[in-house]
Length: 136
Image (tube, rainbow, N blue to C red; front, side):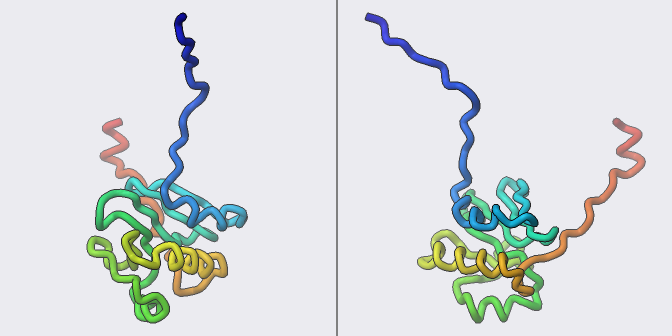
C-alpha cells in the first residue's frame, strides 16, 4: 500500500525568537515592527525603541536604542546593559545574560510607558541622488 503525502498549504512563517518580548506592545496603535539589518526593530510613535537580533554574538539579543546621554541612567537601573561593541550608541542586552527574560520584559514595559530614556528619532531616509536616478 502506498502512503499518501499531502503538500503543505500556504507558507511557513518563521516566528522571530524574541517575538514574545515585543508582543505586549502590538496592541498599541503606535506600534510598528520593521525589518532592519537582518533583525527586527520596534517603533512607538515614530521613535525607534529597540532592535532584536538573533544571529551570532554580538548580534544575539536586544539593543536598546537610546541617546548616549541616557546610558548612565539606564545602566544604573539595568547593570546588565552595556554599550554594544559595534554600535556603542545603543545599549546591548545579550541573550546570554542570566536575567535576559526579566530585563527585556522590564525594558519593554518602560518603552510602553514612553520612558524618555528609551527611543531615538530616526534620521529621514536620504533621497537617491540624481546620478543614481539617471542610471535606472
